[in-house]
Image 1 (tube, rainbow, N blue to C red):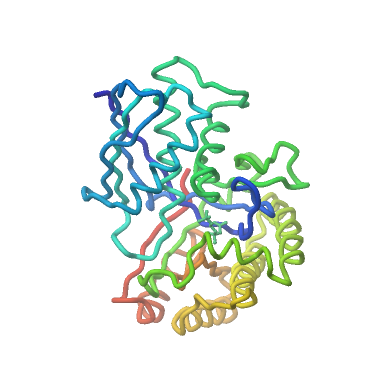
Image 2: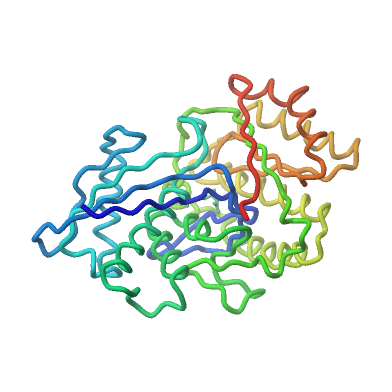
Length: 340
Ligand code: PMV
């Protein structure tokens, strides 16, 4: 058997993707930063199967068989064979594991599909010596394929900051793949840290596929998509200027707008926990009383991502250890930072 090992990093969105159409196409552009420590490592082994299509043999996650994941990955591989003809006639054996601990409530689909898409593109290259299709470069094809597995994975192909979805601020942006924007970003933002405060490790009440689909009938959807489009342009300017206080305002507006969409869906639902709100209040209070520009963002869950500049690491650690960790499940928090 041949073998390839690939690594995909997780990302945290600042302008959020929430709502999609067609084949995993976003209703608005999103902008995220890729994380250094939260990542997935995927090993793909392959041999010929004498069939006309590719088959998924064994699949393991964290060294254990996992039927729901296996079915999802098998379907994914089936769906992308049109884009990687070299996969036809191969049997794949895949094993995957995350760097972050089990059940922390950290979304892993971005890192998982980023790792998987990279591995599959590598297989194509090693078999045919090239990448098929009309893509600007290998990263674009990888991002395109990762998107078909999980929308947010499209952005995890790049280090630093990236944008997925057509934006007025970026000519080369696209709904079908993400692009990096690091050459426009002020150096102060290259030193961002993310403390992930684990409020709850429970399975989400409403998963992201259902959440996206509930946007189809959300009466605020149109305004939300327009807000996200404007915030993408606004955020790119803030990143260019290096304006940390303006960054904090936008980050929190986007986090709460995402959850506002959940609260106004039909049926409405709430993923915030009481401790999420307590942490948010402490973060805002700390910013107000010290003038130190730290802020929170949220994913589709109760955990809080506390974003801050490296220069404030000591003060933030003290804030977490003295106040915030008591609102976390078993005092659990994870220290991460932007991946460059
Ligand atoms: O990639 P999905 O389908 O799991 O959706 C992710 C949605 C959010 O994480 C809430 C926001 C984002 O842009 O990553």
